[in-house]
Image 1 (cartoon, rainbow, N blue to C red):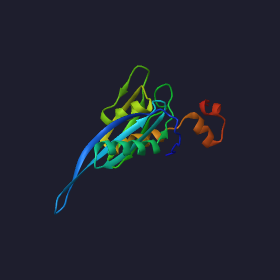
Image 2: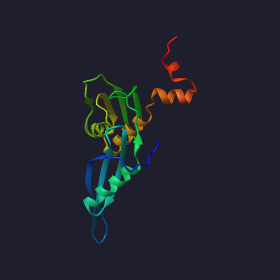
Image 3: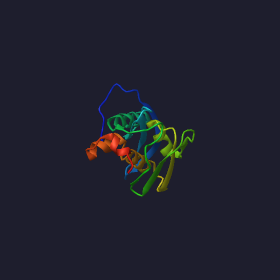
Image 4: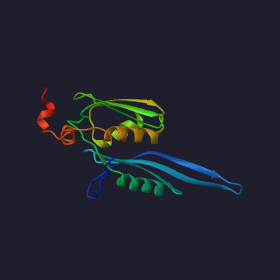
Length: 168
């Protein structure tokens, strides 16, 4: 995953989960909050972060700061992805398929949030295995970062870009 370090980007933030967690000891219970946040600019940048604090506002703020540090660039083509892609994180596996104009985002829950913040407008997705929010986000972002466009393929192979599209 290639991380970006740009500060002048306007990012939209979505809170995915906010959980109250409790640590029980012999003397008392310690309460804290865990927040999971996804940030994106709807033009190909997306990142996520997990924050923990004693107050929910502080947990959300920490998660947002971590999400900004983990921004990755995704290559999109006409509001969808250039080719189908699959990825797995933990016991969660995701399948992403490009869709025609007007299809919309066929995804549910956390996957939809990530794809909306990336800027994808038309896509099919299928999530198998665990529906844990953290694993789902990691699997989707992994699948999106593995996508390659024609420019990167030509660069990797060391051939001109027009040779990629020529069919024998």
